[in-house]
Image (tube, rainbow, N blue to C red; front, side, top):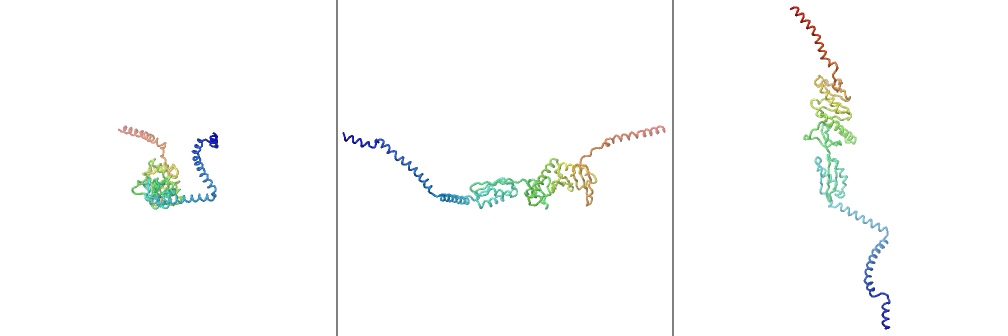
Length: 345
């Protein structure tokens, strides 16, 4: 009995049953795994904490340099060299000039590092190109969408050439025999390449388009061959056809109505003796037309005429009545002659 009691006491000395000992034995490996994981991350943080700050900065710089070198190597690789060029909206502009400009600008940088804004500016300097929108088509393509300039006015230069210009006063190309003839030409173009000349020419284009609209609306454009816009405040029209030697001086306003009035004066004077001698008609005073005549090699003194229709005078309406009165006055004499003839008989 004593031996049994002692054995039980020794077995219970730890105070843990056999069942609890077995369960504790199963849970201890799991706790060790968790503790080991936390220990690795903690050790890594503690290890980085001992690294000096200067070493950290150096490490970041090295990484940045490696990334930059890798980027340059990738961008300059043959993988990004220009191989395809797509153009859209090209009808009058030179497609060859556009493609050669793209190749020249992109050859050194490749498609990936191409300066698209600078390339677009270079393309817009080409004839007929108004705007150019450039986009990348990776890895080796460039797409160009062109908006072309529209020819609006034909200018006669000082050398006698006829060239097309657009509404921005940009010279586009020479007029070809196959081109549609305009209503009339513009003369007085400033052929300098300065910004001031460009500004003056834009003002001339604006005035010309205004005149063209007004004269076409009034049906007068067919009678004009060209418009002199050396001074936009002293517009002069050279007539066409049989009146090509006549210049109409219009001033700077009411150009449509003044041209119409000048043509009315010309038509009214055409059947007179001075009709073939008319050299110019000055309408700068508005309602009054000054007609200049050519006699021999000289211009005679101008004659001022009214550009408005002359109203009928009041006495012109009484002329028929006056004629009737004269007829009545002659009737008594005739009656007396008849009476005397009857007496003689």
